[in-house]
Length: 150
Image 1 (spheres, rainbow, N blue to C red):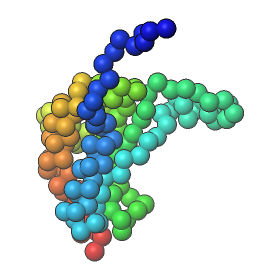
Image 2 (image 1 turned 60 degrees about the horizontal axis):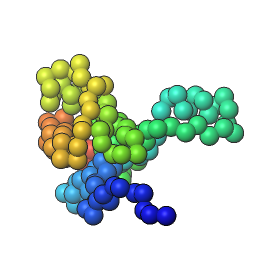
Image 3 (image 1 turned 45 degrees about the horizontal axis):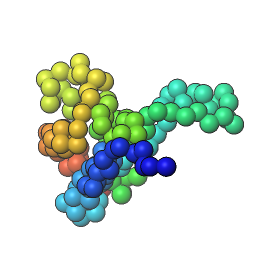
């Protein structure tokens, strides 16, 4: 039989949103003498968590992979500042984002869109992350965490 796969397999790797945040976490850690970092953790959405409580043996297949991104300090492990949560299907893009309302107000002038952000490509996502990481709110959080960590 002939090969029926009539698709192009990309030779260059598409960066996942998680790998982009992890790369930025390394930069932040270097900038803060390994004290402050971004924690990128997978989490279960409310529907999946609720279903698993009712039927713990049953594995619910979700189409989305959910992550939360927090600014954390190695010296204050119990605490963190939530930047955003995001989810994507197996294809990484579009990414659906729920942004911290204070950061949303700083970027968009309102928090009306905080739960409605969708980013369609890796390039758009990198640009969006750059806006978030250069906000006054993030700067204030990092400097406050450094002060608390002393």
